[in-house]
Image (cartoon, rainbow, N blue to C red; front, side, top):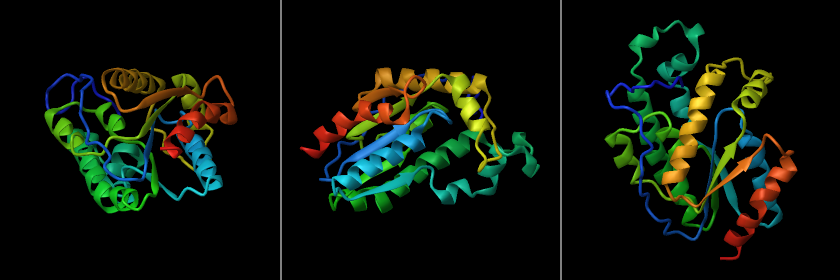
Length: 226
């Protein structure tokens, strides 16, 4: 989604501090955020394999949900070929829909699994939304979300991320450019700096996938021992 210097609510973007709800359940919530092409999916799959080897039940999820991603206006915002004038799409409204979807997903999927000691791995979470908008609505909704037990910011030089995206054969829609990727990355780093979400930052631009996982492995083992 294209970032704007000033969102539709008229407020300048700022790195919001949002206090999420502590996880009251035995299962662990692990979230991965990062710009498109950062390597989230690769790392998430490696974490899933590791947990399978530990016989730790877990589910892998993605937000926004497929229901939101299939919305015509959501797809049109990302795909100019659908022929919808972007001026007729309320970007701020889409970001509120995405956060509301996270709440619905939390009740129906995340909490249902955490209660049963099933770990939940999710591709994108709160700071991915806050990187686009930072209004009071987003703060209030964010405060209703469960705080991750481990939040991983998957970092990468934006030029490398865009190169990876362009090489994808399964995806033809590439709405972001390096300028947008740079701005998104800067905002994600600012959000990590002002929010304590049990964050770690891993850089996939200087290591291979296995070396990247090694940066995370110790944190997973500590969670598993609790």
